[in-house]
Image (cartoon, rainbow, N blue to C red; front, side, top):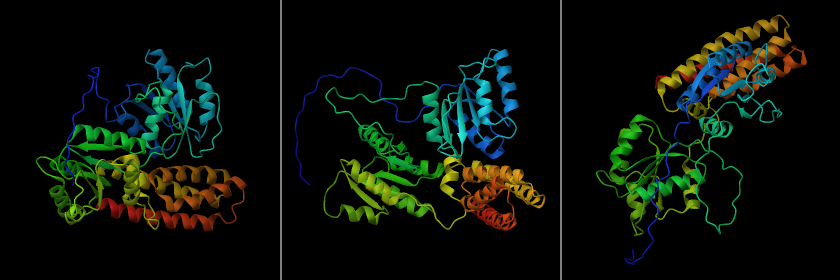
Length: 405
């Protein structure tokens, strides 16, 4: 509660543009996506389009080669190909070798989509991405492969070298409500260092408008803002939203009773300014949403690929359920025909789509079916299939119920 003043004189800094606080789209490069899985293809294509790419998608290696050749003939070549490793016919590795051959332009970059993080490196591959593909990781990969230089902050001459290991990327959706431009910028930099991204608004009214447009997990709410302060905004959020975000207060006050005032307004936690990174990290870990382990679908994973657009989630879910309804009977038929090869390939396709869409409960049984197909011994496959079919029914019921809300 102390009051003090001081005077400081600084040299005038060279005029320069402020560092951007939001991720900007990449240059509109032309990208060819090759993946036989329709759900995965649609999801990754939507992610690429959102990042500013000009994307064409195909379902096979042969189609990919045809499109690549036509693009070169039209003098509008692709800068990048993104290829699924496990495609029938010409697989991903074979397609990559063909692309890097003299027949196709060698300078086309190749990114391989795989389901195993331990996928073997290959001189024909510029980068690997593990499915399901998350937008922040896809953006990082494109920046690296296409040679664009990411934004870097200047390091002081006498600053000790920092650890170059990449920070973890968190999925928590954060909104920062802060009217002070300097504080907003500093908060974004601290969050970036902790592995988070965030959107920003400058008052309580804008915070409410942002929450009405899309869902956030956590709001970092400044208490003193013009037009509508953090207290009123928090009370309105608690009244208006059935599933409100966690609200963490940020205040410069250090007086007795301030914490109680924040909690009474509906805030969940309290941080004193200046914000200390370790305290912020502790609060974010405390209040970040945790997936319900009993749910058959990891909704956070579904949000990762669809954002918070209900129509996008519904489209992807419908596409996945349609594909599952087609592939499960095909697995059953392959088991009846003792066709181990098809059991393996179809189970692999459905497993990939399930992982992408967050349908986690069915994955262990699809893994078992894939392993049985690899072994050639289908003696127990019918039992495992029934379990997979039962889990798919649970997933369908869960998704239909959730999306109706």
